[in-house]
Image (cartoon, rainbow, N blue to C red; front, top):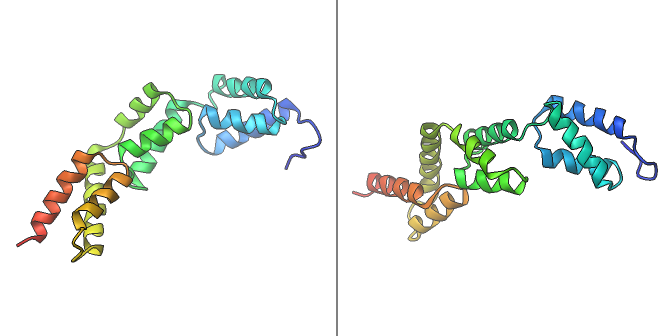
Length: 161
């Protein structure tokens, strides 16, 4: 843990951030924030360290965005809309986000959405606002209106006599 009253050595900060990057993926904005915080708010030195990490290939926004998109889609069940917003909030560029979203397995994502919606339908059995609640749920998970509406129609047709 670094003490706040003593100025941090930029080389030690860079070494600590390299060690972090060797364990998991980070985006440039994360490293910039961590470096600036460790250097007591010196944003110029923090930017230099972040740029150095990018040039040394410890940090790569495309690699980060691809891993983030794959994990959030397959593990967390997020849709493309929610993933896009989360990556944009992290400061990842739109071109990188688009490239990362293309790597998502759409067939698995569709099956994941259908499974999520089936579970939600079971929990809403007999609710008069079932369709509306399911729609809100699917949109909140980051799927598009068209996708969610189509899955809801299919599921409700299976249940209805």
